[in-house]
Amino acid sequence: MRFVTARENGFTLIELIATVVVLSIVAASLLGVYAKGVARSADPMLSVQGVAIAQGYLEEALLKAFQDPDQAETGSCEEGAAVANRQNYDDVQDYNCINDLAGALDQFGNPLVGLASYNVSMNVSATTLGPGGQQAAAQQVVVTVTHDSYPVSISLTGFRTNY
Image (cartoon, rainbow, N blue to C red; front, side):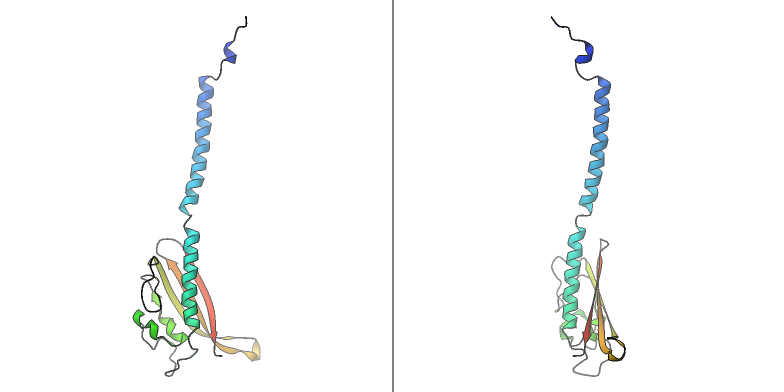
């Protein structure tokens, strides 16, 4: 017959408490890392949406004429600064008036569904492109898109030349 000593029966209370404490510390650390990842998981989507908005505005502006076809160019928006008049913009300089702080809009002034938290501003300025004696006149268009709640700021720059 074999006698079992107290050392062979299992864990002591102190060993169990130490194991629970260690596992609690590990679990708290992992949950903290997980919470940080979840909190920032929307940032890539917001950045992609911001880039898409900026590309749309930039493409719209760069497809317009270099200079106003109707009248002498003033370097600003002769067609009016009202959002509803954006469909009448006929040259790149007209887009220097864009400052959509109530959300991204389409070219007709209609709000884009689900994008009301984005703010869009545009800056158009005259510049030259090319080396030394071969410089050509151009319009530099900068579109900046920001978000109301998240630290997302996207800037795209394009150039329209007189071709």
